[in-house]
Length: 291
Image 1: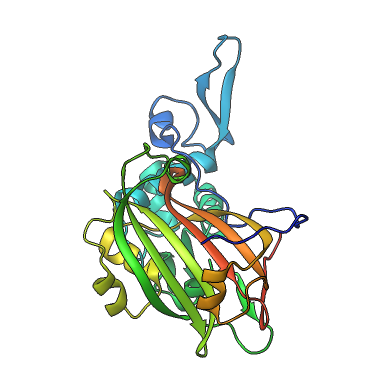
Image 2: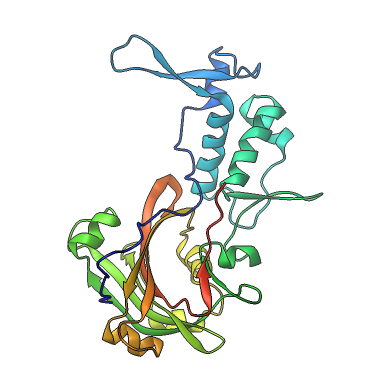
C-alpha cells in the first residue's frame, strides 16, 4: 500500500491492552527461604541493585501473576480451559487466597483470563465471541459491530525488509509470511490490509488455509500455530488514498482514509505480527475505550 500523506495529519496514538508482567522470581521459593511469602507479606525482595546498596522489591501478588503467566505461556492451561481455583493456586504457591485473587484480577484486566460467574476462571481465547472484535477498533456508525468478510489477494513467503524486521525483532532478510487482503462489511470493501508474520512461527500458513478457515484470523493463529495475541501497539494517522488502494476500496484516488500500523505481541512481550491497514470511514469510525 502506498497512501499519500497530507501535509498536516492528526498525531498518532497507541491502543491495546496492557502487557503481561514479565516473569519474576518464584513466590513459593521465597516462602521456602523464609521471606514471608507463606504469611502473605506484601513484597518480597527480587534482586539487589547494580550498586548493591538497596534491593528491588516486587509486590507478592505480581510475582504470583508472573508465575501464572509462565504456566499460561508454557501451555499448562490451554486457551479455553479452566485454571485451578484460587484455593488450589494459594496452596500451590504457598500464599494467601487474597494474594492469588489480586493476581487473577490483574490477569483478567489484561485479558489473559476470564472469570465466569459460578463456573470459575478460564484462559482467554480468540474463539470467544467478544474476542472477535477486541482488536478490531473500526465500528459501524449504525448497528452492532461484526467481523468483516475477507478476500485474500496475496499470501507468500518473503524476506523481511529492514523496517519490518525492526518492528518484529527479526534480522533483515529473515523469512516472513506476507498477507494482503481486502475486508468488507455487508459487501462493501472497507479495509485494505498488509500483514507480516515471522516465518518460523507460521510455517505452513497458506492462502488455501486462510480461505478455508471461517473464524477470525487470530483464532487460526491460536489453535493451529500456538500463537496468541496478548496486546498491541497501534499508530493512527490520516492519509489520502493512492490509486491502487482506491481501486480496491471502490473510491476515487485522493479520498481521505484512516491509516493504522499495529504491532501485536504474545507472551513475554514478543512481537509476532505487523499489520498495516487503510480504513474507509464513510460508514464507520475508529473507537478506543480509555480507562
